[in-house]
Image 1: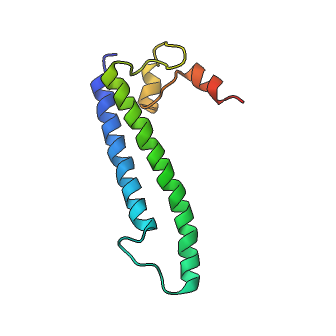
Image 2: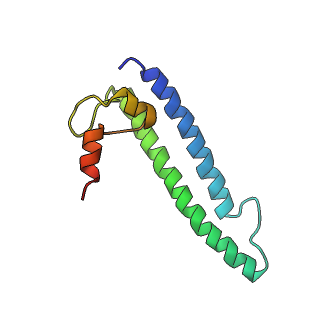
Length: 113
């Protein structure tokens, strides 16, 4: 694959974005920069918000993991090769999902029940 450096740069940029998001959410949910509200009603609202933030933090954590795996595949020379069928993942797909592990066909098959 010719554009590996371009994809690596994109992955590093995405990793920075998701890492920052994860860290910011962690600070928010653990009230590092702002204490827990004293008013009980406000605490309830804050806790409900924390549940949503926990889900967003987990999603960011998963994205960082996927990106790290893609960076490892670049390092090992396996980037852009479908983990299921061994065929090349189309560059157009990698432009949309730079951490893709599977070609479109295999991703579709894997998502079916």
